[in-house]
Amino acid sequence: YNLLSKNRIPIAMFDRINFNIHGPKVVVDNYDGAFKATEHLITNGYRCIAHLAGSISNKVFEERVNGFKDALAKHNIPLESHMILSCNLDEKDTREAFAHWMRMQPRPDAIFTASASSGLTICALAKSMGISIPTELGIITFGSEPCHDLISPTLSSVDIPGHDMGKTSTELLIKTIEEKNDDQSMILAPIRLLVRNSSFRP
Image 1: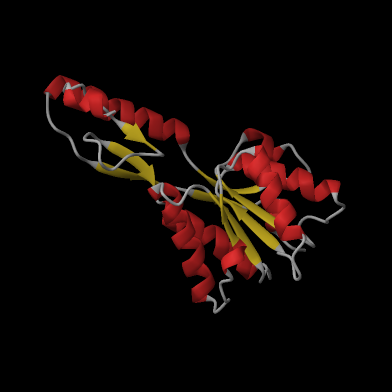
Image 2 (image 1 turned 60 degrees about the vertical axis):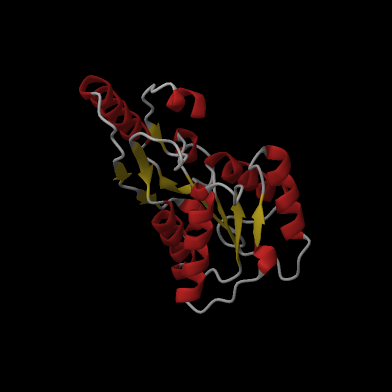
């Protein structure tokens, strides 16, 4: 990216962006999405909530952690340091984080994951252990996949409008090229909370 920038090649970024790179950026409100996801779990009766976070050195995941923390604080739920685990969000790390939490007493009654794929992994692991979702364990993810509607139980998520973000960032890039300007605009794409069966206690 720095090489492209040094050679004055226009760059537009969306979703996981680098704030040090010049050019227009399209992002979602990661803080707000995490806050709403966590608050949704709280209002459905979950109190021992864990967060599987991405690398905290990435501002995107840092904002999601902050949203998670502030939602707990708003509802006077103590934050235990072991309830936030930062990892690469791949299958191996997700399995290890889940195993760690399941050895705890008390173990989490809900998990908010920072990615769609890690949420699917946790859902599969919980089912393999005979853990009832959402009765014993609520699950919600940041990011939604079409398969979230097809698994059982269906998986709640914060919806990221990826198509719209890609379209907007391309339009901004074309505008930057045609007008030869130094566009430093930041656009926040709207998010939606998709409440499905995995986080809605009957």
